[in-house]
Image 1 (cartoon, rainbow, N blue to C red):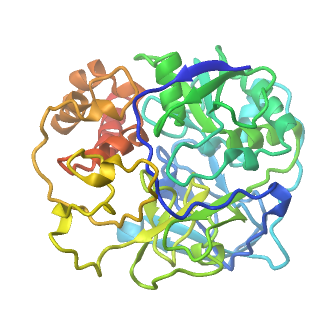
Image 2 (image 1 turned 60 degrees about the vertical axis):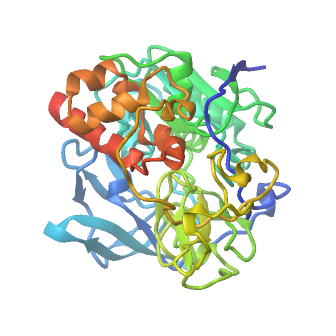
Length: 450
C-alpha cells in the first residue's frame, strides 16, 4: 500500500491510435533495426569527446563518447556492431553516432562484477553508461559525480497521451528494482521515492517509499513527484529517473549485464497498426513502424509523446529517454473551412469556446498545425491550471526571458524541468515555446552560477 497523492492540475488528451496492451512481455516481438543512433544533445549537461570513429568495432557497453569535463562519465553502445558514421554539423559538433548492429538479434551487455561500496558502485554506473540515464534537480541535467542527492525520485508510470504501460517494461524485474533501490540508498542521505499510477499492477518495492499517484500529465514526471512531496530548495540536489533506469541500476549493482532493450509503444492515428515492439535504445523508426503509415509524406513522426517528444521524421531514430513513437497528421495538406476558428466538433481544444472541449469520451485525431499566431503573454493564470507545483509559472517564464537570476531563483526555477511546462504549452493562447524557454533559462542559470 503506497502513500496516496492526488494531483488535480494537469491535462489528459483523448487521442486515437493507442497500442493494445499485450498479455505480457513474452508476447511482444523483437525489432531488428538495421541502424541505431545515439544523439549527444539528449544527454544535457555533457560535452561529448568521442571515443570511436567510423568503421570501429564496438561491443555492447563500449564507450562511444565521454564527458569532456569528467572523463569517467560515458555514453555506451547499447548493441554490438560497427560504427557506421559519426554525424557532425556546424563547427564539427557531433549530431549523432550511428551503429550497424550485428545480425542475429539484440543481446544485453556482458556481465560485470557485483559492486559493494558506494564509490565503486558510482564508478560502475558511469563506466557502463547508466549514470547518464539519470537526471538531477536543479538544472535537469546528467548528475554531477561529486554531488550527494538529498533524495531520489523514480516514476513507474507515464500519464502522457497514448503512453506505454511501464508495468510491461519492469515485468519480472522486481528483484532488480529492489537491488537498484538498495544501491541508490548508499548514495543518498534521504529516501528513494517511487511513484506509480493508483491501481497499477506494479508491486511494492522493498526499501522504497511507494506513492500512488492520480492525475493528468505531467503528474507522472518525477520532478512533479518531488515538488509535491519534498520540494527542492537552493543548495539541495535530488536525482530523477524512471523505473526502467532503476532496473538497470539494479543490474549494475548485481553484476548482471545491462539490458538496453525496452518495450516501445508505436502509437498515433496515422499508424496502420498501433502495437508494442521490443527495441534497443536508439533504434531506427523504420524498424519500429513495421506495417507502415496511412498517409505517406503528410505525417509527423515523433519520438516520444505529443507533449514533450521530438519530431524525428520517418528516417529518424528513437531518442532518449522515450519508449514511445507517436505519428499524427502534419496538417500541411488540410484545406479547412474557417481554419483554426472552425466550430467543428472534431476539433480538439482546451478552450470552452469549441464544442470538442465538452466531448470527454471522443477520441480525437489532431494534426501538428499551430492553429493561431504567436502573441504577447497575458498574465491570466492559465499556466497554473496545468502545472501542479507551488510556483507562479507565468512570472517565472517572464523572469527567464528577462534573464533575471534573482527572480528566477525566488520563483522556483530550481524545482522545474522543461517537461513540467508541456501541458501548459499545449493550452497556451500565446503559442509560446515554453519548454524551450525553460530549457534555455536552466542552461543560462547553470552557466552563471556554477
